[in-house]
Image (cartoon, rainbow, N blue to C red):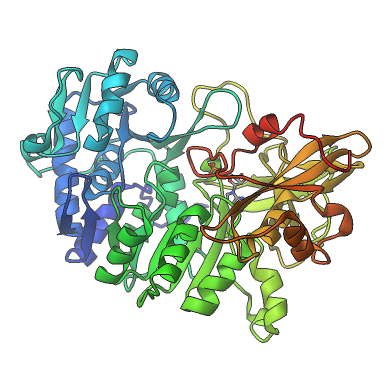
Length: 541
Ligand code: AMP
């Protein structure tokens, strides 16, 4: 017997319609790449998304067609999220920080029909256009007056003009909730980037779960500023989650430095923000150097790379801000776990609580996880055993765009992360499987050593890699960037770490560097470091 509830498909358009109907006057604020602050409401964003829907139809965009974006977080990008997916086309966000050849590969692989781009990327688009002959037109996200003056971009349109030329009379269509809605390529450290194709259903389920109190804890009383770009896994789903909850939405455009962010945080009374650890390192330094405080921020969602415990403590103790340590992947929409306490933890002494909060967190409802050994045998959830982390759930990919090979292992998605899971379900990443350091047949967690190194007051950033060793196979090498005007020697660094990690985990050497390589999404590029230090002579070797 079937239930008798209304059978309504979960549509992305229902989010913006809901936000308009019940939070119509709630503000959406953007710092514009062309300068100035733009301010309007969910009501306006819904109207412009419908105008865009009519414009896309007039351009001949059909269901399933891919529309690319090379854009910062702004109200226009927000309208594209809803306008493109709303008509049944696929919003393909592209990371402009990738190499132009990689972007051209992605555009051609996705077969993007139009690309919407911020004018700050005009030079990039000039270089891309000849390599992407199938793109029918390039739409600059500005009005006519700011249109880039160039004849090197064929079929160049101005976004505002395109939208304004169309009526807002548009009814969002309903179709199968499993229809593709957006596409994001993830670049591994080897091979070509791979596309992850989200659906309306997966996006809505992810938005529901992420808004929960033990998720990102979002409500109509929040003012949310995603520093994480809308080209990085849909800004972790925040554009959808704010429409679902009716939170005020603040977008920083291209202004991602500490000063610009602080200004917006204060001006727009931001309560929740989200980004990768590098962004927050910059913000912390700016706050400390200028003796500033953030008067309204209550939580910072930190993910994408491990949030160093020292940073979590600094925000909590010095600024009264809760860090929500979150873990996920492009393949997971992205949220998998968020770190919040359980009721039984509340009365624990601070030192015990500290041990919990440095972990990556507990799975949201909808995400199931397990760890396995090299033979695929499940390992105990005892917080000690570590193995390959596998996940399942309705917002986790089953395959890659246009690929015929399944990445799954017995219906589970292998994350490539190595982790422990404790009896309470808290997961802790110890490494990426390919970054793992193997010393004398035993695994050493590079992340644990990095977290410890970064707790030293003179350390700005740290990376630990395995370097070949004649006896132990590999031994850890610590690379450190010092904070400006701060001094620390190799011996002081090692003395600081001694006793805080197992003796055999201690780095065999410390090298001070001026910079460390990062991927286009801000993660340490360890493969590059491993190559660079391949022949490094450890003193112990
Ligand atoms: P991406 O698909 O680019 O978002 O990368 C996903 C990968 O980033 C994960 O598989 C992890 O290796 C890493 N990652 C994401 N969040 C965290 C976190 N909180 N701690 C450690 N690693 C993380």
